[in-house]
Structure formats: C-alpha cells, structure tokens
Length: 229
Image (tube, rainbow, N blue to C red; front, side):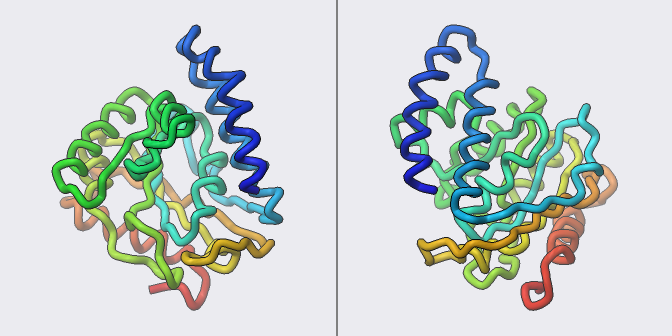
C-alpha cells in the first residue's frame, strides 16, 4: 500500500498539479487522490462496507464527525463521502513538499492541537470551507484511540456546527482496530464497516453539550460489542 502511494503521489502531482495551476479546478486532483486512497486500501487486503449513505441529501453540505482508531481511517472514509470533503489535519503534514501543497490546494485545514489559539483559528478556517459548500470531515476525538473505545470529544467541531448551522453526520468506523490498531505498522487483511448515521440539525439542541452527547451516543451505538463505552 505504501509503495503504491509513494509511486502514485508523484505521478498525480506531475499530471494534475499543472492542470490545477492553469485552470484553478481542483476536482481532477481530488478524484485522483480518492482513487489512490481507495486502491491502496484494496491492495492491503482491506474490504470496505458502508451503510447509511442513502440518508444523505446530495444537495446539502454536511459536517461528518467520526471515531478514530487507525491510520487507515482517512483512506477508508474519505473516498466514501459523496462530492468533495475537506478535513482538519495535523499541521505537521503540511510541511511535506508534495503532500502539503496538494492538501492546501484541496482546501484542507491545518490544526495545531497543542495550541488553543491556533485551534480556534482552524475552526474559523473550517467554517469558511463549509460555507463555500465543501463538506468537512473531522475525527472528533482529536487522536486515535488505543483500545478502540471512544475517547473524550473535542469541542471545536461543535463550535463549527453551531457557526455554520449545517447538519452533522455521526460516522462509526468498525473494524480498523482489528486490521491496524494504533502502534502497529503491519496491516491484517479484513473487512471494515463504515456507518453513516442519521444527520443531526444543530438547532434542535439547546447547547453544544447536548449536541455532543447526541453525536457520541450515535457513534457509540454503531460500535460492536467490546468497544462500546
């Protein structure tokens, strides 16, 4: 999988970077990136099943809030999301020459989890992306869970939901803890299930804490026995 990505990334950059620079159209590069992510996962022997995408309205913009236990979660989840999505990603990733340039061109949002002021600025930047009609995908725990159970949620995504007033979609990823848990480099072939829960309107809740609790319950209920909190 990593060899494939190492070969595909420079090829994609060579072909599609000039296109984006000339036309300003990021879509071909984005589609190439999603194809590369999906193909790399397949080469690793991981099959992906999804349920719940039929709950989404193609005309709407959403904030997807997911659990996070493995480095495989992004290349599994992002290609499933219809249309185009941005993500909040670690600022360190933007320092890689080709990858960082591609992430900026795709309107991804850098975030420094150790700097509160920088985190607030990241939420503001994410709000601009959402208001432009691009989905936002956030791993709401802020880091990978070592045991597969939910960690405490970060509050930033819920400030974002209140600011943008777009529906929130809780997402449960099942199986990546068995396939590639935190701390293990090797991948065990297997099946991963991604569940898109019913979209939630932020204005139905009196507070961010109530919205957070609803999202947490939805994600938690989608986990298999042994991983529910």
